[in-house]
Length: 464
Image (cartoon, rainbow, N blue to C red; front, side):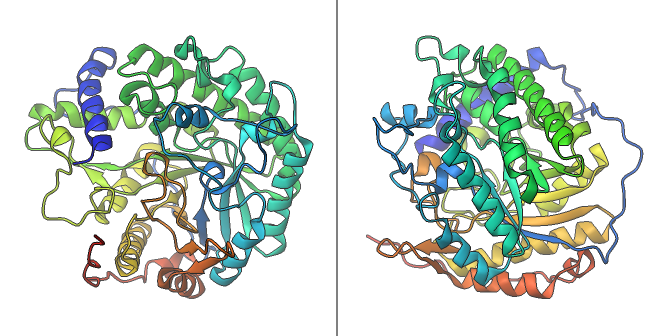
């Protein structure tokens, strides 16, 4: 078990006990949803299905500037790196200075949609000071995608904040909770939506705020790195949901036809045998939707980021992966394709809104295993559609092997990898497989025909 997982497990285990004091728990292990919905829409089987790939600015883009340059910017994650609490990013995949390399790979795979994020710090390196060249750079990304026949999905925030929202003296006043955060966020959103709206239909205001807030204020691994700060957790939930709702309103005012997409981290939680009355299970389920419960009504589509399942018991949280006998990723995540069906069902029944899988992928050096993983998850999505759940699209993570936060470049999720000399994206067999799936399954109804895949080649030998 690696130290990262142990820290996460201890934090979550303690948080589950403490959060019971904040949120009443039903002793029967069930939760009463905040939303009250009546039924759910049924998809038209002939509707076009969105086949997408998701990426993120910090994980893909090179800074392209140096300290002292007029356009220099820094994020709160760069602060964490400077404190030696995360591996350095370097130039990532050079997606800022050479986005055409990404476009060349996309031209071969031919997804219908592509999600990228905007680096707030690059656009606004100082409070109220905007980099117009950076703004136009993101506009060019959206325009070039549109010209290729790929629908851009613009994410306005993907984990990182400008460093001027990070208060080193008082971390509790950082990021979501900084006095300037909401005012500057609204101005930034307005500026970027006005600039990109001619080429953009879909906007995702935030990526996995529920996961980021938990990791920042409960686990203590992400900025501002506060452990078991329950009060700050709730303040951040309310601040982030307020900022999400502001962004949705701004988007609709600028472009009424735009679609608002939520993007939440939603693993499937299994019941653990050593969890009397479902106490911890209930808390994890409840906490997972603290953010979504407060913003779902302003969303047109609910995005589900699903990678794994876990059984949260007092022992299993500390002991590592809890579903023994199943396959794992190179990050120790439990592979459970059926969990994506269960999560779709839970979200569909709870909110009654159209859904998309906005991230799904696997960290592995075995590309045959990647194909197996993707096909079996797609099979379960097709099964959910067949059962009447309105799933409008599927986005895999990710286009290329990229920077993965505390894992650096050791966790490989990509359909391709970058040639360090040419910066070209070298497609893996999984990219060609995914391209064929996209070609053969253009409608919602055809997704239901994706078959279960029984096995994959053996794991490659470990390198010494």
